[in-house]
Amino acid sequence: MRITSSIAVASSAMPVGVTTFIAKHLAGGTRFRTGGSTLCSKRGLAFGRRADHLVQQHIRGRRLGQQSPAHTAARRFFAALSAQGVTATTAQVSVVMPSLNLRAVADAVGTDTAGNEVVLELKTTQATLAEHARTYYLNCKNRPTLRCDLPNCLYWRHQLQCGFAMLARKATRGLVVVVCTDGAKTYPVEPAACEKARFVGAVEAPADIYAPTLKWPAAADGTLTKALARRGYSRILGHNPTIVQGRHGNAVVLLIRKPKTYARSRASKGHRALARALTTTRPSTAGLLVWLSAAGTWRTETVVPRTPPVL
Image (cartoon, rainbow, N blue to C red):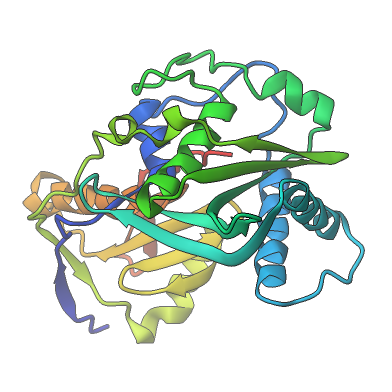
């Protein structure tokens, strides 16, 4: 089997996603645990993605005609905005602040009755309004305070997410909308969440990483995709870098050679550094090394574990 090699080098200007920054830097990478929260589940995350997609489509002109829990959640989001005098005008707005080396995608941007821009953050939960009110301000038991001197609770994590987008766009108003199973609650973004000092400290990717990787081999697509499917990754989202999607979430795949001297080689350290750099800007994404063994079978190793997303 002939595989063409290439050299992958991470860019020193690669910005960090703000959700990853909150989870890995401000919270120190600790698992978010309150002891009483039921807000984090695979089912809840899947439901949230569906509702978020419907919100995006409606902002772009598609009607919310069907009847389903996700459609109901989307309607509650827009009803909550209407009650605040806000109209969503643009979905999925990318923002970046090179001075902080941070980036984000705001769920939506809209305007209020006075014509002011409003940055919008949508959050969905499988909890009722009463359950949400009980858990939203509970501090994490593993790390009660963030490094930016704010409580480590869902309320302030959401405030910081929306606050960063406001800071990047110089917007004066932001709203976090939490949609529950029996209604929705809006939270204006507090000034403390928009202070630039709260976001200092994002780690830049190393400027020079020696990490020789291999181009995706067309002749091995069948066996390679089957090997990834056995690990739970059933869909290839794209290449350069290769991103795969599965039941556990997404992963960056680095295709490498692994000779007998690999463990002590410079490339071994470089591949791990490159995987960390590529996953830093992609929230809730793992880093995966894939190589062809001497026996001719594809082997995999997770070198960057998946960080739970900010809900």
